[in-house]
Image (tube, rainbow, N blue to C red; front, side, top):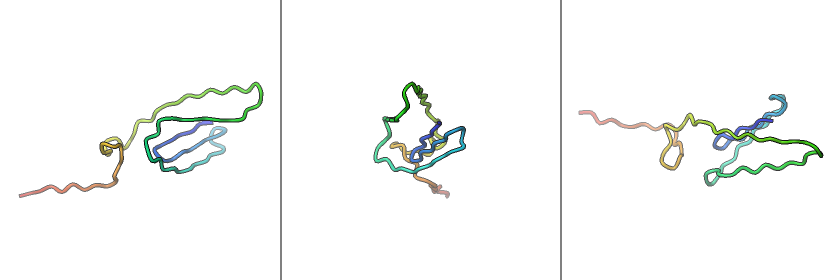
Length: 78
């Protein structure tokens, strides 16, 4: 299973992408914790790797980390 959280989208891929799921969520504050729970058969092993993604939107973020969309800046000419 592989999963990706990208701002407000959660995508999960199972069996190398044979089964997938996507959901949208709208957090009220920055995400700072991840909780995983499961019911596994006896003897099952689980390992988790967490990787951060480099934001493609970083250059457009304001000081709070929000991307406000398409913004036009007027240039004054004389």
